[in-house]
Length: 340
Image (cartoon, rainbow, N blue to C red):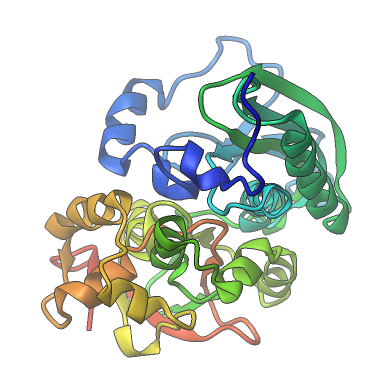
């Protein structure tokens, strides 16, 4: 029987890490293309937001509208392989990332269940317990119950959550509701992807990246609702450009990004210069290139804008206190995305 090394680096047991291991956006859209605009002949409830525009979560109306649109349930799930080596921190990040989809829709998480894949003959059960503890504490910070879950024996460690929340249907935030003339705000800096890639290769931990990934998007969501924002998404594995392309395409507008206004985590540019760019980031950039005018920036800047984020911030159509304005939405032009 083998014994575990004194220090176990979780990232070395997975082929990818975090949201960078998502199926590429173009491939994913092809896979689900036949599933949109479909539903049961006699639905038990009204689906308000579904798969059609690739929004962050599904929304179902749960009660009759009285003096408004009523109350909705928002449902989402997210899981991935380790993005950091520490088990507890991995759990916190994965849970914060799953909870983010509810916040991105303007909802409040109320209950979650765990999703755990674990190579039980390779990694000790004590580490799995630490992952779950991290997820539980992130959910508790959000005021969200954790009511169990499901686990499997898996060749790679994976963790995440399925989350259910509630929201006011009069104030739901959607990715297809951006209108021309609206500013574009971003609530967390970019750069998590290149910093995590460096950490996986060298063991050098970026405390700035960890702090960003473990921070809940709760306050940003509440600020967006208070500001009357009705269009937005969160920035995860498809990068800023990928998620913004989806939002602008669904809304029928063009998104213009001021590259100089986009904030980055400390060390992100240095990690990029050292070559720590994930395959997911390059696929993100390839996906948006046919629909974008990136002539004003060089390839390095474009790669940072497409950097695959894990537990990134909210991308909002409107001004939100404390969040930099990084561009605007304008009437649809030749390109869906323009970086200046």
